[in-house]
Image (cartoon, rainbow, N blue to C red; front, side):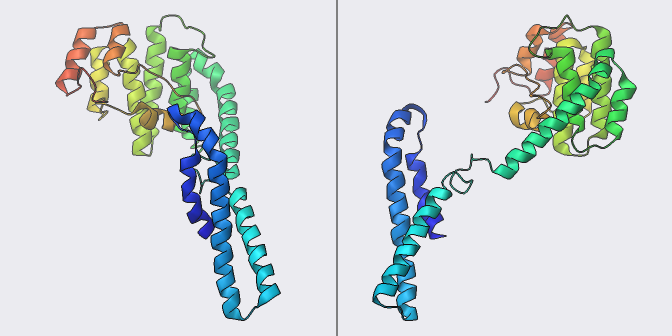
Length: 269
């Protein structure tokens, strides 16, 4: 425990922003100082306990040296653990992330033909399996990326009415199947984004009536965190108003509708 308390000094040694060069030079001396301090404190505590227990001279010296070595070694062994750095990822978490990616790749390969063909029953069947590796938000993201964003970065032709309606039908099915507020919010924002680009004012109003709030969302937290590893399902930075610059139907009507519910012309963030 003392070793971990001493490790609180480590953030001082980590390079940050413009001070990366200076931080890199300072890192080794501070790291060694922290290790020495951990060894000293750990050794001192062990020495006090050993003295109280009755050890003297050579036995006490040997115990103190061993304790100091173990404390210093423990310090370096745990340097990259999450206890030292909140951004560090444990081996268990990496294994879980890799398993999620593999499962999503299998889903993507299996569902791609149905997505390309606009096969709604296949999408509904996928939602009905309640597979924990494919949430409703992730399934909608897979469909949306194929319809709007393109796979592998290639451009897509103009979204047809048929493809847009297929995407909306999948969004409604996913919305009805979602069992968490976070998942439902992600689905609603993705569906409204598609409506702002390719739908009508009535389509936007329907998602508002379902309770979707487009005012200043945190897209990374509210959407991307719910759709990974299916994809980030990116959108415009100044959402939702920037989306209207690329919309296909009644931009003024959609803009008036958004202003009416309190969407700001310049987002607070």
